[in-house]
Image (tube, rainbow, N blue to C red):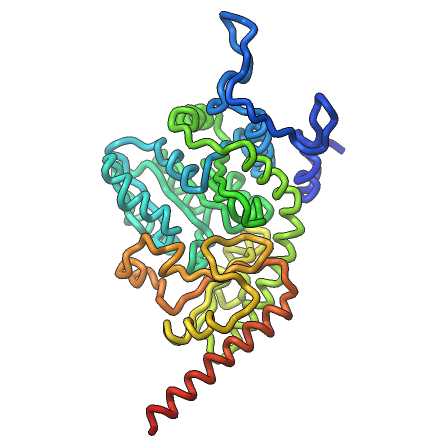
Length: 397
């Protein structure tokens, strides 16, 4: 049985960087050198300067390319560095069609930075293919997908968007942060460039900031490689090593977190104080079937709404187990408030237009016992109920 035939779970451990060929070490060596001696005046070796190539970073780039089923991987200093560098494939006069409830940092880049470079955009609900078609312009050169989307967990039909892009010779980007290659393989569905905030599930321990990109086309790999070197937002070697270490446990972490997320989503969906739950693993989710067909699972992130912002504040003041923080995809459960965290860069009017309410909270489920989380959420929601009762009694008096 060859390495190419291994399951994803096994490839996380048994890939081309399983052992160091020189020493036999089962951990990729961290090479700190910023520059490399050249023994030939006319022909330099493979490594010359750390920004251009580094053995530790290269190992991570090789591994993520293999896991995504791509030709070449690229490691960047953050998820936004990966996204921003990938956008530099476009030129002045180009137009992007992009999913409307995209991550706030991506929104900021597309809405405030790219227009200054002469790159235009149209935000659209990508669950509506007719709306996507109507958004296409003569100068549309790219489609940007984030599926499931952040934070409303909308699911885009990846194959359908890729077909539209192919018809007009446009490239497709897909942010695969929420599902990772463990659950979704965008390149196999027709996507050109897969992007990751490796800070999240790929690393998984809230101890590194990193971004990754993977392509399947040799010419595109050359263009993105040129930009990675030219723009220079590369990942440091210590961080590259931390991502490599985190990847080894990706399967078991995501499997457990997803199982717990499903249980929590069902609990919240049945709770009388929860107005709405956004999770593609629920049969009631409008794109449940599409998600089931194009991915190996719904992931470990969900969002839910309470009655109003005041109820949400009471809930957050009383919940004990999750941390309340920016980010997701870690071993600990993380509650985030999109309006002031992930989507703070998006003006309130734009958030409301997209359905991102001030009463919405996002939950990234970690590795805690899900029954402990349910008990914790139950007591926090009970506090919400008690406060509402006190307010009602005050009004009656």
